[in-house]
Length: 125
Image (cartoon, rainbow, N blue to C red):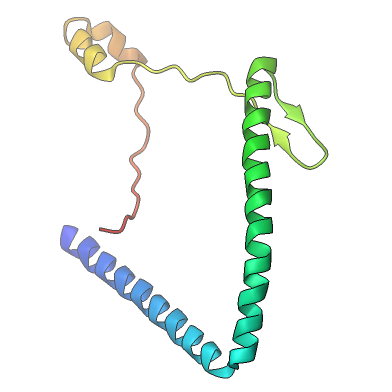
């Protein structure tokens, strides 16, 4: 079974590499069509908007943090016209290793143990 999954992962990596090569080739073809004047103008436009976008991103980040802190103090969810901040009660967690050790001598608590379904994620190596 692991050979099958490894093969599928290799196929997936191959598709991802194909995507990257196609995107690079596309960029090369676009660059061939652009004249030096157009490239220079595009660079000017990029430079003009980079600073503006960075400022807006900084404003967004600062205001998001302010909203988070205010909502935490408020203690409830709040709806705006277009966005909503959702307040969540803190999650309860337990020291699973210690409880498993405790359950060995107190099996009655095992009835309260629940385990979720397994899940996977695909990561680059």
